[in-house]
Image 1: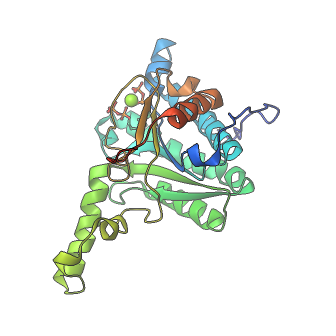
Image 2 (image 1 turned 135 degrees about the vertical axis):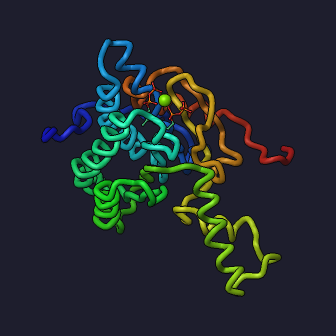
Length: 253
Ligand code: IPE
Ligand code: IPE
Ligand code: MG
């Protein structure tokens, strides 16, 4: 528990040479497949989650190496409360511990940590660590890591609409003034750019309620590897695939 897990510092990353204009500005990563990884090895599901810690740090390193400014990591969804009490308890404690263990490492690398999620139900100790990490890293500029904990895309839209509706009710906003950009400003992280690359390992091909609003025109890349086996090369492969895609946004060439 005390051991600080960090990526292998001697490992040399070989990011693909891709012109900046073809790089995603924002990658949304669904860290999935931990339970299956552990079960395939006859271990409790929690062992898979534990492996995910170092993998996430490697992904951060790989994003830094490529110059990707925004990474959102799906760590706990508003639906994950449906799991057994034991697993929920483990995941809450684990998120708290990872934040505590890794905030200095992230800070040293110039990573700005931001939390996206819903307050009710989230453990206070997790919230505290999220706020500490945000506070410590607030002026960093190398990249932004959005930790999505107790996050749900629909919950985010509902929460945003609720705040905006209050503005309408108090007469500060007229309904006809409401626009997409206005509602965007009510999302958990108003500075978050739209998702360019939505990446999900584990073989599942669904969004599972992740960044729905921001992913309207995201390129979806699904990979079969389970998250504990995921590494920088898989991220690089996803970014290369992204760079080959033809993005039209409804227009024509
Ligand atoms: C993702 O791995 C981690 C969280 C949802 C917190 P899972 O726990 O969903 O692993 P699988 O999908 O059951 O293998
Ligand atoms: C999505 O994975 C949530 C996180 C990775 C945190 P899930 O494993 O919870 O999603 P489903 O159940 O496959 O849709
Ligand atoms: Mg899963």
